[in-house]
Image (cartoon, rainbow, N blue to C red; front, side):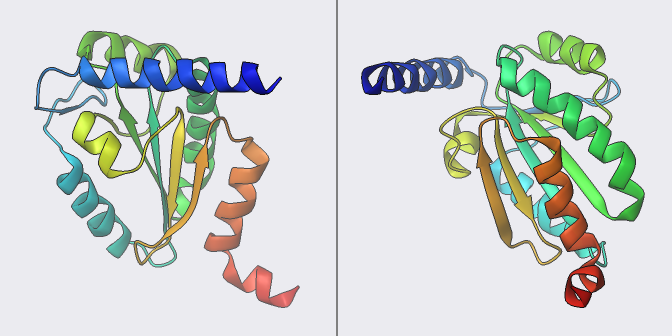
Length: 175
């Protein structure tokens, strides 16, 4: 069993490393509703902080994924549902694809019906944010503090609990 886990971890790491190495362009791009803009690790950090400063009791989820990752595909559906439910209450989600093919990512966004902004990341960004497996999810509070980091698929109920605890702090203090 240990050998199998080691093998699976090694294969996952190699696939991630191969994907990141294939990111031959140093440029990155946003793919959301057909728009394309540039972002890198520093810009993402500034974007998160700016985004959070506009929210009173906000929460931002940053999801790192690829189109070929099956758990990532499942996770994107969960996040789209959460975004639809909680966006008006202060939830922001930013997807960061570590793919290198913009067309493939665009098709993935349409197929999965992703309703939140998605950026095409690069090797620097993945390492800067400590991404070692996919999907990797970071959850930030309104002050930009990293509250949670999930590696691998995360169930919707776990996200809901975290989101509701942050967006409804009065509810927690009454318990």
